[in-house]
Image 1 (cartoon, rainbow, N blue to C red):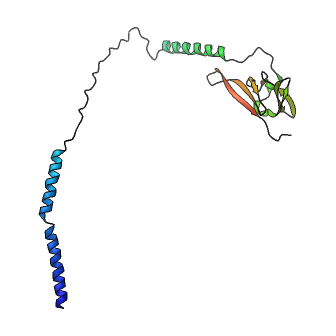
Image 2 (image 1 turned 60 degrees about the vertical axis):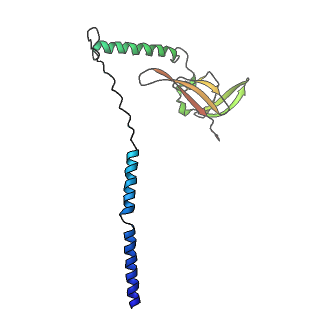
Length: 183
């Protein structure tokens, strides 16, 4: 039993000596090192640039048009209408020509069922209401003034002219693809 007491007393003494060994001397060195590092490092702060000088402009409303007047609105509408007129001259449907039979049929009711070469030029075979028509580049197709621009073995490419929400004429490309396995 004495041995057990001796072992317990020895372990307690060992722990006390270990704690005493971690005394203030190591901490004092650490505190000194931290103080040296703080004094050695100087933060670098860039100076704030000087603000730009504001020069006020005088407001001279004499001789200018009031921004919400009818005159200002009229000028804007005239400018827009002149631009629309210039665009309309470039893109517009040919209203004076005789319409072709396939122009009265909507484009989604027309189906391409085949193609062939006739007189050295590609010709597309299209079906409308179980009737087959031959069309080539230059023919018109659909209700939106669609003119065929290209015929290939598998498609008919056309350019439609439609009116947008503002009433201006714009071009829109459209394509009919070959219907595989058609009767």
